Length: 267
Image (cartoon, rainbow, N blue to C red):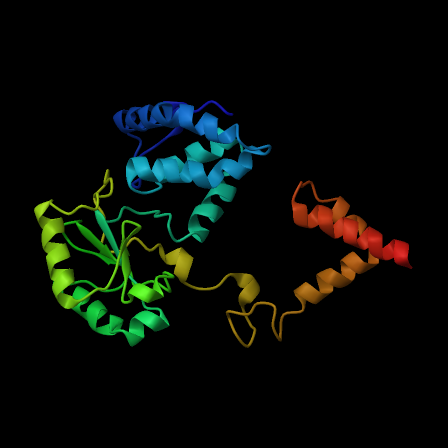
């Protein structure tokens, strides 16, 4: 595990060079370090501990700040790009601050059949916000999600990952009232930084990468008009050593080499 120092960190989201803020974050790292070490020790490869360690920082801060991403990279000794790509892939990691209550009604087929559209419209009207938005007071964030696999209790939702079943407009009003009054049985999320209107980062949902341009469907970079995938397979077919030359321990590469060797033995 790499050493993590306060001097390595700048401001949470603004990037300001604030010494007191660096010291506060360094204290969080030291607080979490024993648990991080315990988690890392469970795995042969420290990289396997990335997801649980990201969760540890999010539980402490309420989101995974840029400083937390850098700390994770140092703790498990991987490039920052690896941590950033992982945190941006999973929707349960928030890279901007969110509300005290993350409200996630299900919009799966079973819930829609049981009236979820009416309940989602009721949420939006009562909160004054839409999908992927946070209320001005920072109390509620709202996201309409895909099937939560509780179809027998539809319409359902999750609040801070706790299930709430058999939703009605009346039960929604009662729940929101308890949350505002601080009497709700579901615990509030940690919130160390004030949230913006949305926690979505544009680069995650904006223009596709260059590899997906000039094809019939921007969501299918391997489709018609993009020959790079087939060209790479042909190169590997001609020269399997291309796989061996990659400095990686990825299973896909190792297994790929084994498959190619096995095919060669058959012939």
